[in-house]
Amino acid sequence: MAIDNQELFKYIEKRAKYNVKDKTFFRNTDILKEAFLISEDRAYEILKDIMSRKIVKNTKEAVIEEYMNMLGSGYASLKEQMELFGGHKLSAIKKEAEFKFRKFKGGTIIDVLKEVYNVEDEDIASIIIRYMESLTSEEFAFKVNINTFHKFLDKNMDELDKQAERYGL
Amino acid sequence: MIIETEDRLLRYIEDRARENIKGKSFFKTTDVLEQAFWLSKEKSYEVLKNIMARKNIGNSKNDVINEYIDMLKKGYVSIQEQVDVFGGDKISSIIHTAEKRFKEYKGETFFDVLREVYKISDYDIMHITEKYLNFLKSPSFVFRLDKETFHKFLQSDLDELDKQFDRFVDLQ
Image (cartoon, rainbow over the protein chains, first blue to last red):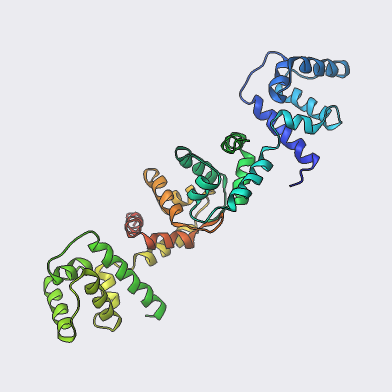
């Protein structure tokens, strides 16, 4: 699967926001460190660079937005930032799932989760509930399939991370 | 009665009869008939006499049930009457009520469907979801959660069929 820059950009933004969700920070460098998983030194360097050009607000949103702008205009490579985040997890998951589906002999959705996605017994109920809740329809017609499941993982960073762990990615 | 309905009801009678005697053992053939088809003692004797006048059947539960189903097929008793003995054509009445309730439905998720249309309590919801998902099989990762498969699931599970029937009866 080819991932274009725009897709990478969106993923980085989502991941950065997820990384600082529900956390409070005193310093802008701490926001940069936590959001983008960068070193203290690197965070200071970026902040200095920002302050020499403009004034950003002291909020998580403003700091993340500013660094995203910088990434967008080539300040650092998107690929390198992705690597800091452990790579593009969804595409790695898709690849691994595709490989495991080749050995899958059919069965129920629970068999799919256990055999293809390596979901442990104790996680089955909670993942099914969350997945089902992510599917909406005006009538009684829900598509439970590989596409909607990967969309569900894409929308839920914590489930995405858990799935990456299940695959040892 | 159109043939399709007749076939479906015959299958329903057979499923119900087998379910009624599942895990039980019997000494007398009439007892099998009584329990499987909810016949009276007198009626069971009458049926058995009728069978023995025509042929020898084995003494097993299956033989007795198969023979009576065959008699139903041939018109010995009305299929509709036997269905009524079992409390009516439950799946048809469930489908009918569900259709009416879907017209007012404004939910979003699968669980909303179960709660709002089928009136399934929070207590039952996970259990029925698990059973339903276990009923759906696919050679790959392609499942459709919809009315059709849900009603098929209810037909395949008489226990859940009865429970769903009761949920809708309680509404009236």
